[in-house]
Every structure is written in C-alpha cells, then in structure tokens.
Image (cartoon, rainbow, N blue to C red):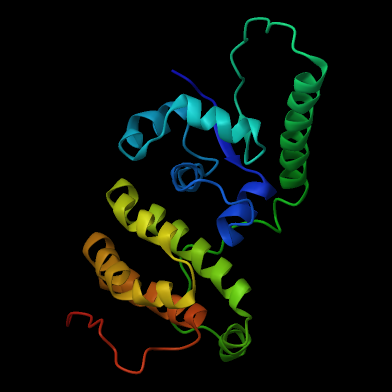
Length: 219
C-alpha cells in the first residue's frame, strides 16, 4: 500500500483560483482532488472514474502543480542520457516543483483553508468586511469554502458536487450552486450543520439572497 500523499504547490493553488496556466480540464479536475490528505492509492481507487491515474499525478508533479507532502517516491530506474537541452528542461521543471513545495511549507498557515464550520451568528464586522471583498478574493474564498466543507460533511458522495464547483468561473456561478449545496449538507449532516454553513456561505457571497429558496425543516 502506497503511503505517498501529495498536496498542491503555490502554482497549483494559483491555477485553481485564476486558471493562469490554462491547465487542461482533465488535469484541473485531478488537481482539485489532491488535498494533502488522501494517499495516492486512495486517489487511484476512489477517483479513477474522473480520470485520476498514476501518470496524470506524475504529470502534475513534474510541472510543479503538486509536491510530495509525505512518504517516499519509489526508486526509479536510471534514465537514459538526454540531450543537453532536454536535460536542462527536466532540471528546471523539478526545481520549480521543489521551490513551490518549499514555499508552501514556509507559508502553510497563510495558505490554510477556511474553517470548515463557522457560527451562523457571525460578527457583523466580519460580515461587513467580506461584503467588500473584490471579486477575485471572494472567488478564492468561496472555492476553498465549498471544497473543504463538501469533503468534510459529504465525503466521497459529494464528488459530483465538487466537479460542479470546479466548473464555476465566477461568483454568480457559486451563488447558483448554493441551493444544491445546502440541500446536500442537510441530507448528510442535518439542520444544525446546514444552518451554520448557510450563514457562512451567505457572508462569503456578500449577503443573503433576496428570495430564500432553501427552507430548513421544522425541528
């Protein structure tokens, strides 16, 4: 059983948030699944249906989108001697990946995801600050919020919801996903969790919807 665990580098997080490097949709989907917690074997076993393969993980590693957070890479056979230009490119790619991993370790606290569960009665000062976020920052916070809470409250059953999160291109797309997300949380964890996460999500979206379409059942 492989104990190799991969996580996103700064470059990988940047790609998820901004699409700066224009990674293919297949590799972007796989990049979403790599979270620093699931081992490579877990990824291959649970997410093969969405295209996760050892080769695709290796490709992300070589291009500097992920790094080995724990465990050891298997010893590879000695590679044939490459022409100078190809060898230089290979060294540069590995250096970029190592630099991204080091940057993540140094700034781990700064890059930590949002808290999974927050009180529905958030301080008004916090709500006010978040209502004034620029679109790019709001998009990043919403992306992190959806992914972290889907993983923690719904688990593997939330894979299709995570794929919809991946397809979101702006804050309005995240707003359109609100009802389906809250219904899934309600089904998985009940009213209290859904109420708490609804409050946090509405803060990140910049306020409650004009017409509430998510109704909690009476206790």
